[in-house]
Image (cartoon, rainbow, N blue to C red; front, side, top):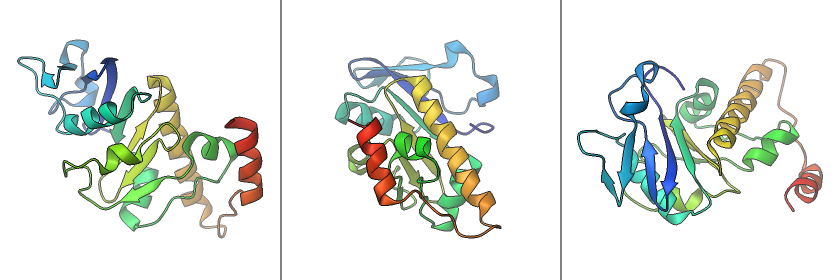
Length: 184
């Protein structure tokens, strides 16, 4: 996560969750700054991220998703600002962790619709919002950060390898082997 941008939340009980606040630089964040959302209402005296409604909808529609990270990691955003689709078939770990990463138009996460919460699942844990951010989910917070790290590494590999030629992705037969071995 970079500078003051980025939102992290984690499910606490049922659809209640904890989320980072708005207008607090991430390097100054303290435990007492975290905002609790309970029964759809924010903790008194605290202001949650503007995207808290999105996090709430993701939790409501996806009982297996527990953390949500919304951030602007630089190499993933290279795909988000260039209208390019990221092919995560770079190495087995990337495809196993991320599957296919959808790219949505700018503003899709501002509209109070169910489109993003319906697209995000434990099997499809990442979405890029053009010209804005990447959203990742998972079962546990560490797993979600790991997915972010793998996604950023994959994006960086693709961007840096462009000087050497076109990326040669893992082919469909190899993906099927990975599916059988790891996603039973």
